[in-house]
Image 1 (cartoon, rainbow, N blue to C red):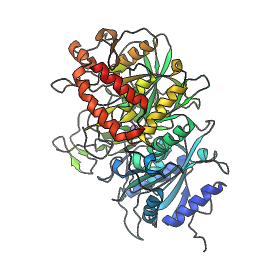
Image 2: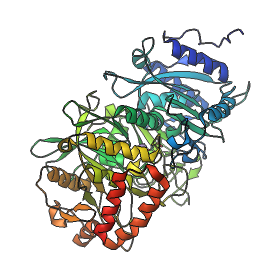
Image 3: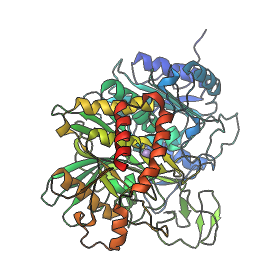
Image 4: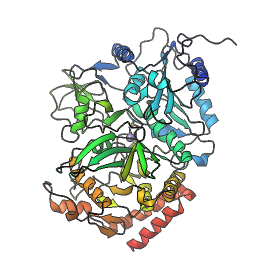
Length: 603
Ligand code: SAT
Ligand code: MN
């Protein structure tokens, strides 16, 4: 058989034999018009953003330099959890919380979908590195894609191109990640603004550390370094190698005494991770700096402490609700330009707009490309519309944000969106109790995934859609790490809920910058300085243990936000039992014991 010649295939900038063979194989299967190796240069950015503008996918923003507006196909706006698969060799290794298909069966189906799927398009080969390039063991990947939108998004979200490829040598390990929009073009066929396919698969092969994605151009489905690699595949690597890959922001909190603490916090998608990561404290003398807003990789250092690294290079934040009040630092970051905006609204003078950013102009172009006025019944921006912007230009990034050593974590926060039951903050008794809190975390669903919003579901460690293996084994991994470590050096675990509501549905706690009061209490607990009451669910502050100086909120609301209500917690027990029953026999004994203790304490 003679090898197919596809322009660009000959001039590969690497001698990495396995990578070359894979690129050749994919090109022969998908039949692109040409193959281009992404170099990550400014010239490449300029060329591809122009191509996207010419195609109608991007509109350049007159009011933000080097920034672009894109609106997706209305069917391609979020992660598709129903179409996301963990294709482990054994079904039980995928577990009750993941979709599973036999790997060879999935590969057979997807190979047919991929056959000829890049006709009429360019196939890009994007070498990338998750986490610092100068890490002891750089975490490499290669995404093959036929989407220019993906290439330019990867410019922002990852370290990619030549600087990543330089680390491959001739045989470095890397995660192969194949992506196609699934929208081949016949000769002369006019392209659409947002090509995609009705059939979608987001597949992971944990044993061989591979990712195959088809049919979607949306961030979480298509930027494969993010959820697919840094959470689903990395969680499997972390289990095998004794570390943690978590859905957590990383922030640095400096006290008035100038002591720095690092906090990692897990909340489900669209529950305020980015806002907390960039918080402006309302209490004097405290300072927050940002290291990451979505993913933390945590490994034990030589001193026995847990060190966190953010594998990403940019923020892919939920736009609606972001403004100079809720997240001034995000606003300042995107104001500098060099950003992409997807599914927000476009103003007539070439700027972006979304619900919650301020008064609506008299006329907008909505995310559906329709005329929009304040009288319109539909939202101007999709609730899961996103900004994509480099960390580098965030004024409050911590200087050590890309230190390959990472930062030592003092506290881990778990949190969800719950109108009832869960107090503003609860401190766990120890790591195992904290693991129980994480494993039973619950939250109301948001627009970040396709499906109904506002439904309470268990979202363990905010990782429900991202655990790349059996959730019971994942809990066991958390338990085991805690047993192996020196208890004094482990982060203290807290459970928070900014979203508790009063009888009339109003939020009891003002949130945003005021959350600094909760951070302060947590740090003072670590330092043994703040008071708390012991309850059956852990240690909860009374209102006077919190610094409430200058807080403009009724004290009754604050007290209600902190309240432990035994009846509400008794009602929670059957839900946790149902949840553990769903996970099945792999629920660690330690967690069953935690549940039994809680039941007993509740009486
Ligand atoms: O949609 S993404 O997966 O890119 C972001 C998120 O849901 O956290
Ligand atoms: Mn996320």
